[in-house]
Picture 1 (cartoon, one colour):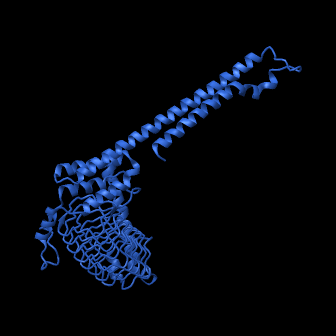
Picture 2 (cartoon, one colour):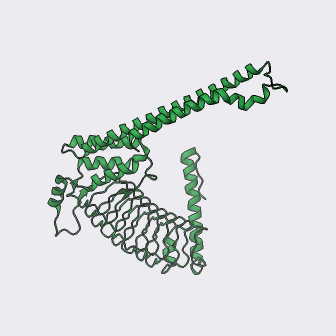
Length: 412
């Protein structure tokens, strides 16, 4: 509707409303209470004036209230429109700054978009899309740096010769990472981005879609990748040491040659993957799904597999020294020649495990709730080992109380 037409309709509605009000004021009381202001003979009662005046006063009060409410609504609507106009103006200015050739102006545009995102909830998705598009578009300096490091003869990648992430791209990533309620807002679309040989140390990449991304030789030490999707990403030679990958998607990923020492992989889904010689020493794999994964050449000393799903996984000849398997599902897992020295098998389910021997279990930490194959649990040496571990556990608990309370434990 054109503004002129809209104004005409407003005037018509105003005149009609005024006429209706006048009619209600004059004849309304008589229609409502006419039978109360006349006697049986049709003459006006002595109280007629009071009744009619009271009703007209009530009509005026109702009309005044309606006008006041309409005024408040109109003020609120104008305020909203004004606020929307301000947000739109700020958004347009931020986009202009984002396309500037000046680095400081681009940074100003990025942080302006962050402020708008905090002030306007309905603009979250749009701003995330804009910043993701900005991140996906590499600057000329960044492209030249990647080309300088591109050595076809180096298939493994050189993590010591990484190009730093552009300052403005790093700022945009930071804003995307600390957006309000990342679980509710759309995931940032960085699919198939080329960050090969890029320094992403301590980068905030939470809830980012990195499907098919090229991260070969990238430095991701301490990076936050919680909830991100790395399905089909190229990670050869990438360094994830100390990174947070809780809940990340790693399906269809080749983790051979990837540095994952000390990485938090809680709850990741890497079913059926071949991990090759990946270094997972001390990694946090609590609740991870490793069903039928091939872990034969992985480094898994001191790894934490609490509540992990390892049914059918191949752990043959793997060094699992001091690994933690509390409540882990190892049913049908291949454990032939695996090193289980001081591996904690509390409440672990080993039923149907293949290649498992008495000699291996005698070196592990066993308890009454460890589900051991019947043919092995019947062994006297296994029952004795369970008793030893129980006594050792009680001694450790007593030693802990001693340190906390100052009471010296007595050896059993």
